[in-house]
Image 1 (cartoon, rainbow, N blue to C red):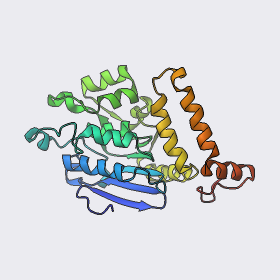
Image 2 (image 1 turned 180 degrees about the vertical axis):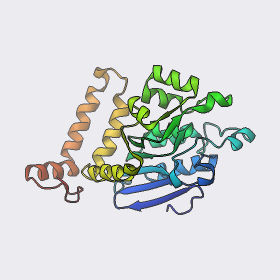
Image 3 (image 1 turned 120 degrees about the vertical axis):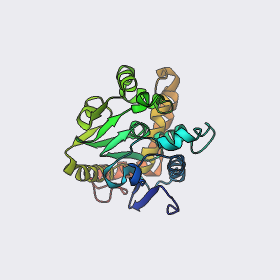
Image 4 (image 1 turned 90 degrees about the vertical axis):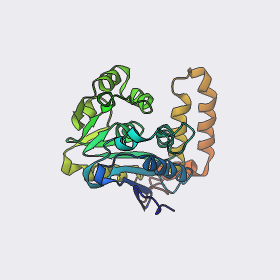
Length: 261
């Protein structure tokens, strides 16, 4: 199912899909084919409840150096109706039914920066380099701009988009772009610890909570109170929640937790 990709490596292990950007000769820069393949991964994993986490990383020590500038210079950007359109891919990642974990080392620039912005949990090496260099190339971070603003706020986005300056993993943590930062040697253990912790999260609840956040964001409370009450009652009465609450009361691991309380 996930073996026919030219720009990605996909490895399904237990409840985790490891998706590796795999164009190391160009620092994993995203060409239109990679964007389309990433989009297809997120769509294929939709409703796949046995997969609870998607880990995004880059091959050979670099997360993603941005878009493929040579391709962009010579070819028009795919239209908004194309699966190779960057916004379609970012939206599919943003709204995935799974918890998306970004494992960031090396460069996370341009479109790679956008991928970080649509991850649920971002873990970065202190030595990682982040930036939005588009302004220095004579272009704009057009597709990723809404996600950048949502992630770091309007004031910080103005600074980063208009200067194109680079900054470290430690600064990315200060800006709220990433959730954890660690020494380079600690990146892999930090991600593994996070994955083990996420084992306790129920698959149906993950998908429901992702939808909940987008449904209630920036909407008046009165508009969503009915939806919120109905969602809680639906989940509460469902097989997953009944099993989870029963396990809690019996001081046992939930069925999906694999022994983790």
